[in-house]
Image (tube, rainbow, N blue to C red):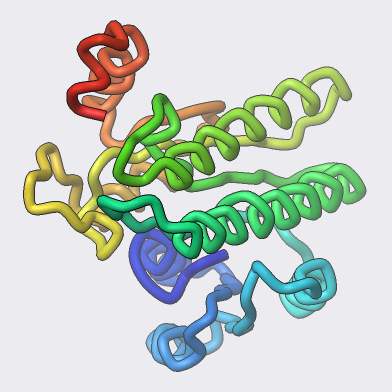
Length: 232
């Protein structure tokens, strides 16, 4: 989900290149078709917007075209920074990263429960750890995703299910989402995608990309508020 650019596109490219049959989705059909043509016969493209109301129907159709579903990777997301608080930015962020996300995740978990196997993954963010004055809705939406997936992992275990649930929290990755000129420890998108695929294969519950970002997450989590408020 969300393979027209960035991490989602790279994950799809690697999997298709390794011989997997991959379904890609996104809102920009021309970019989906361009990627599809690069992997003759190994990519199925479906153009739709996850903020609309027909997600379940679209996903059912994709699963049928694939002949089954083993992984569902939710990479669709958006986020903007702004000095002034913008209702338009916040509503768009919530519609995509919360409302659209939860519909896809809910469908995926129930689908895998019915078929008895499958792995669900989401590209959340290190931003999930704390709030941020420049993008309050984005950080809050990523916290929602990470907490939701923690709940799904626990639910699967309580059900005695073998369904995999992996939450990925990248730091800065070299994509269009990384918009500041004051970035550090920027991970190349291909390296990030490879690490994500490995984490899913190993059925990790949570992983930070790259691992050094676990240190940043720890520092942010335990940093006293009187210090954090100066940088957040």
